[in-house]
Image (cartoon, rainbow, N blue to C red; front, side, top):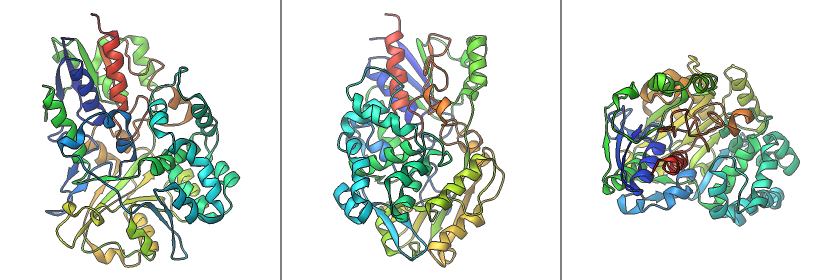
Length: 471
């Protein structure tokens, strides 16, 4: 196939789309507004020299488990995954932590009386990940090779996390562990879909793990860019595209942007009806993020926390539910659920010798201007007394600051839009990637399957564009 294509945005989805187009034989140009490609998958010296922090994503179960990324020879371009001894630690007030082990049998053993129930819930999806992931990481469809798995996940999607946890588990420790997984949904834990997100992340933990890339998230972007270059495509950075009318002589244009940006860029190329649909698109809650340069590892009361790259801080299921419920109702929690990543415990390239980096964020209402620093640090110190004594430097990102760093993070929304049930099924419209202009497509996390560093939004958008390209 010949022809030329342009991709706007060099995040994981934009790069995935560019690779699919280049593999099909098209000449591909990629334009990225920022000086560094990657979008939210960037690694920068945000605090002090020599401390390399992930701007956005830090731990990547969806990247290592991505059907498209797994089809690419990214290891030949420097991508190396590091698995911490345990996937996840969830500290509790009694000084212990409940752990999410990668091996499902070991996880069931650790969870004691709830082990059988945990295995019954996760094993159908984790044991069949290679067949399940391609089916669930795509738009809603009716032709499937795994109907019973999708039906099972569909039923879980109708359940809330609190209902599923109370129905399945007896021990508060297990309920807290599952609540932390489900809280990644940006939903209140009594809403539909929250349970399915928890199951999806739990299944991924046992199937592919929750690894970190050596050198940070930028290593994923670099490997994608280098492979793309081997196909003859060109990535141009510091090249912001504000008006698609400036792009000529392209057979296809794919935009790794959110609906609001597409409206600004596309202008009169979009029909009035399609513009109205994009104008109705709803964005979701934001995050408040802090990056730390540390003089030593976090002094967790529960030493098991040092075995995991990811730590969920939130206490009991009830506390996590209260935190997420406040966020969903436009309030900030006094005790927010805090997601923590400590990659330098397992990757020495991330900080000077003997020093460490830490990544932490909590959920806040969309566009919130509330400074959550004290509440985040109080939560960390709750389980790691004298944490502040280890802090050498901080970089604080409010929702507005995140959007300034990456225009796709509208109001601090890292999920590309609200993920409640009505918008989850058809995002941004019932046409998914297609717009009203036949040569123009959207391929960001505002399209199926949504948020995560997996590239599947870009992959499916590019495949659709190629199918519809006049021969």
